[in-house]
Length: 139
Length: 353
Ligand SMILES: [Zn+2]
Image (cartoon, rainbow over all chains, first blue to last red; front, top):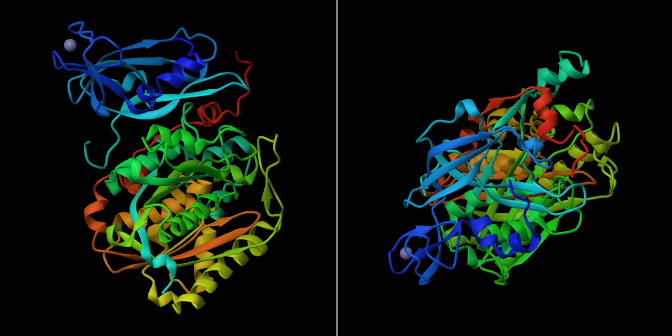
């Protein structure tokens, strides 16, 4: 858990709010979070893309030791997720509990609070992943 | 001909959090008589998780509305967000949702405040903007994490949820507006001061002079304007502070229970304040057939009510399956106890930071 800086969160709201990643125009692979350089081949020839909001949970880890400011979210569950286009990323999981988690379960991205700066500071929002709720079509 | 009938609902969506608190748990904690929930017709209520607030709830409802509208978010020219649980006293919530859905930057965006009918005011404003040609599409969202003083009778119903509607040209709509009518007065039935965590209500004011008077006047005004009667409607959806009031106001207006039940959600999810009547409308659209006519009448304390006549078009059926339905959200639930509810809704005060 890293405290978010206001400027960094604002700069990267496309990634935090809309799951924007990058696609490499040389090797064709996608990655998240967005970076100026493709992590797969080192090319700087990348473009921004909106990644699919659904995928599956490849593996997960559960953290019980929580820094101050995050106690209401404990235990914190982090998932390694493979999106429907094959892009992999690590995200916080929500609306679930450790005994519900299983590998390969369908997950979907939802906007949630990720950090609240005390009584007076900013509320940071970002996408987290939750087990897919029934209904609707797959995106 | 009314200006409204150039416009319609091109997308609708709702969201109900997963957690539920049974009314009997509130009876147990606060020592109420066991008959109180039955008197209110409330079985259980939806509770947002620790990381949910009116913005995140409004986001999911709006996302579902966009999935049904199947339009480029950049074509939306106005976003209205009605809530009485704004995460910030000063800093718009509408811009957060608009940004997260890719609607920004060329759009109007603002938060509306009128207790439970702020989202409905957004709907009337959306109709006006679209009918005048100022914008092609406008979105209105009603969402709340409703507060109630712990131990107050309001705690049985105050819940979390929301709904969103995208208004656009009638030719693209799943249902079009025939007309609308608003009736407001200064009535002291329910309020919350700036630094108070919980609202207060004027005993004896909430029912007759507030809820019933305003809804009956808005609906009768609409009937007169459009020359319609209750027999012309297939569904009637009213604001739902509990399960009983909408049935009672419907009866007084001449609607049988069968026309009210399809849009009644409060007994199973509680009163989602700005979501209340609008989730009911979303649930009716989830099941409506072309040609059917819907009456919807939200209410907000302070006080006022809007009445709308909405006619379903042949486009409704193709849109129904494009996003999760209200009933699916209602059925997908996890029960929690009062302790977790208190933690999730910030009722337990901690020193942080
Ligand atoms: Zn590459």
